[in-house]
Image (cartoon, rainbow over all chains, first blue to last red; front, side, top):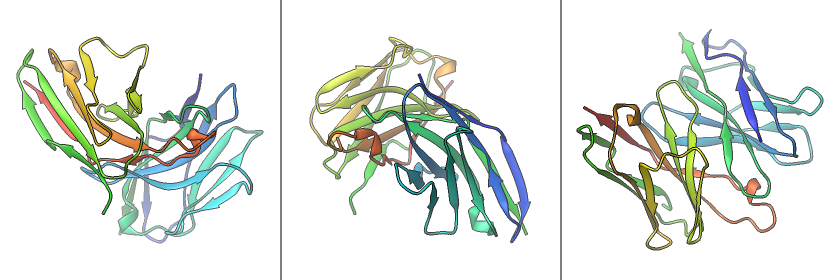
Length: 113
Length: 117
């Protein structure tokens, strides 16, 4: 069985400040790791993923996440946030065999001017 | 653009009145998923189709059923909605991905928000 814990339900920050959204997972098998973003009244969109190789993965809009196997973590970071980053962020793990995603509870990121 | 379309976006029903939500995709993906997302909670997988093979999650209530008449369409039927079934219902698709389907990125629709009065 797999589970995902997002340690912060809400994270308020000011524009241009750095942010970290924390994610820990547990699994008895190797997993793939994802971050999805959900804007109001929209479906989930992929932000970035870790499948193998380099433990640091980056998105096209400045987010990055680092896979830490020993700490079973996949925290999401951005060095300088924008108002448009305001959204809910979901960390997820996938069973390699079946592709079923298990989501964390989500973190609402609110960027203030 | 290839995408996943869910209808209706908003559905209001009365307690016990059956509801059907639809999902269509132009991605030609062979896997389709239905997730239930309640307010401030993680999306929860209800069931998924691998081609025509139906896979029900163990804790999905019998009140929820699904149909997939062809590759492009999938339906979620709620036979007797209760107040606790009010939620956003998300449809997603994914390719089989060879030996590692778990590596596939899921494409989500915008969701159908169900209100039960």
